[in-house]
Image 1: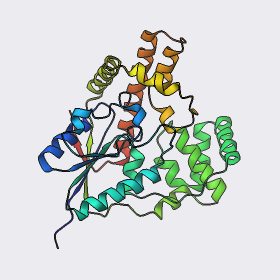
Image 2 (image 1 turned 45 degrees about the vertical axis):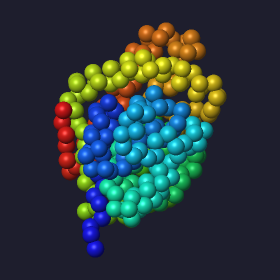
Image 3 (image 1 turned 30 degrees about the horizontal axis):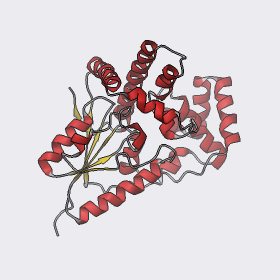
Image 4 (image 1 turned 90 degrees about the vertical axis):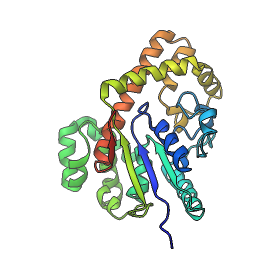
Length: 292
């Protein structure tokens, strides 16, 4: 029996060239490109999320791009199920696959597994959040170390969201989030995949982020956002949290000039890229690196 085709994972920050690399590899190998970006799932956000163009999609088989309506909330679990079903079908056809994107949790689900953590009640989450505000990060982290030393030592400085999440899980379930995570199994078999992180020079990356915003404006991203906000969808939906929605909506509603909105969007894009760099540096330290 032949070995199953290798699955390639390509991760990295926004504007780093992930899609271009995936397309080049797909043209050379005949691989199917599978989206691993939580915002490029949404049909409403082609320009804002810099999804592959129609011309680029015609050069290789692309899957899970623009498959969801903005009113439909996709979770990491739902994406994982769709991706694994696709990978199983491609393996049966003896076709290689390339998963590409910047959503770290998607890659974590594939390579480390999804923890079946019970839902944290809202009142518990709110109480823990208030405790964090009252104590401050240092004291709060010390308290977390008493119940979940692994989480306390691995969560990055300043990552309030994950610190509160870890403590909330312990308070509501009586079990450390690290223990829940230790029980999980990866969705991809060991040896069946290889990982690549594109990790550009930070200054060059920031310049590319700025150019990407300029390109979005040239491609009428304001019209795309205008159409989306006209639907008056709840702000809690994942699609409505995409980088750029808030900044460009402010411009469209006359709360900011277009110039100020562009400055804000470029800053938000650079900050997002910085967070992604940090995530992949910490969560995928042994993946192959491409530095450009």
